[in-house]
Length: 281
Ligand SMILES: C[S@@+](CC[C@H](N)C(=O)[O-])C[C@H]1O[C@@H](n2cnc3c(N)ncnc32)[C@H](O)[C@@H]1O
Image (cartoon, rainbow, N blue to C red; front, side):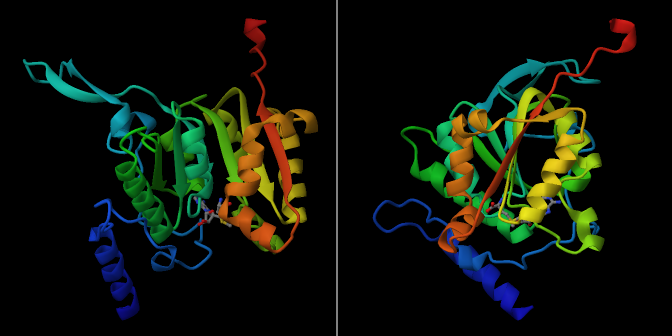
């Protein structure tokens, strides 16, 4: 406990310290935010999440993508100035860890809102601190205004954040493998969860997966191929997608596998159009 409060104090000191030359906030140090590798997705964590996407306030996460307008309010005679978003989140990195992919994608898609969702508290805080520092450093091009990170257990609450067909890309990079058969239910890919990914993805949208665990790769392929809303993207189209290279090289886990000369298994799945209801055909 003393160790944790000591670490918290060090983080606070580092957060308040500025770069002596530029006066900018310093980038956070990973070593102050390290946390046990696995968080149990079935635990009752104390999490903040909206009861529905309409209740989610994105304006504080992406202030550069907001505007104000006057709107009527219940029981008020006067119109009130309300902040609204000019864009919605379109790219989600599920289990973003320390955010390597987010920081690589954000400048490549400067007009698209990118969101990391991460279950571990300290790791989420690291990404949020890094975003704060990078935004402060880059006042000329306005980079990193389009990236944010929230603490969330996506296995439980993904549809609380996104409306139907909101997202164009979902990344599942190096998800926890949960090797033992009795732990497979904790995997981030399953028939049930794939239905949630299908719900929040727009037709033509892509789920990107990468892992160094062959058994998990086969599991992900098997579960997405078995799902009627997805089809696997062919090798040629996969390799032509610039996000694939980013996912291979910029994720923290991808870099680790590279250092250990390990193998990376990639598979992409396209969200298909829903078939017409019988009464529509
Ligand atoms: C092995 S790490 C991969 C991190 C990052 N994607 C990368 O490739 O470097 C898996 C991450 O998923 C997070 N995670 C696991 N289950 C989750 C859940 N249900 N909701 C959100 N994040 C989760 C873990 O905390 C961990 O940071």
